Length: 189
Image 1 (cartoon, rainbow, N blue to C red):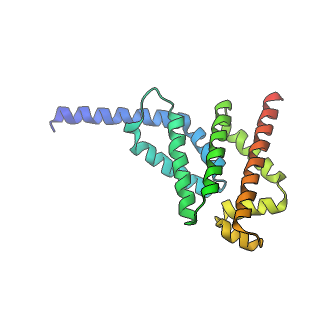
Image 2: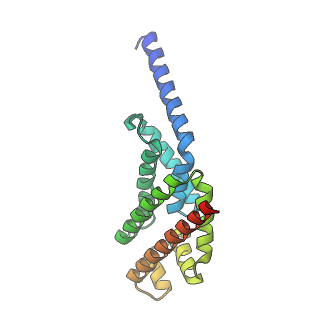
Image 3: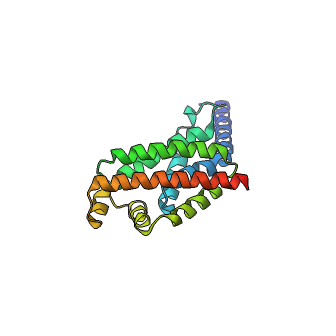
């Protein structure tokens, strides 16, 4: 490569990095919020966010300028979250992945409506988690903070695994409804 070609290549790489950073910084809160909505353990969410940033940079050549960068990043984040849960437990989680997809879709709708989704959503999520009864809160904590597979949770509560899946699904639905209600209430007041 000649010096002139090397200089042109360096300028192109610098402008690519600049474009990526501008888009990433503008949209990072939305992507972080999305991850936090699906991964309540902050340490895990931070690790996933770092992985998402790395994957986004490595695939930035595939991003089509003029399209929605946040949506593209959220799609990558969704795949990283799924990989995180697969890694956490080798057991089949078909129901959980379906629930994860439902929450992800509803979350995307909520995020589109929010100007500062992270702080408002996280506040609403915390309040809604606080409203859960003790047993449900314990199941959520065991599943998402401790990373226990549903079978171990079922064993601790002397229930079957499908019962835990149904309970987690019900809790997710309750949380989604509670969060929606709080965010709507917030917009009215």
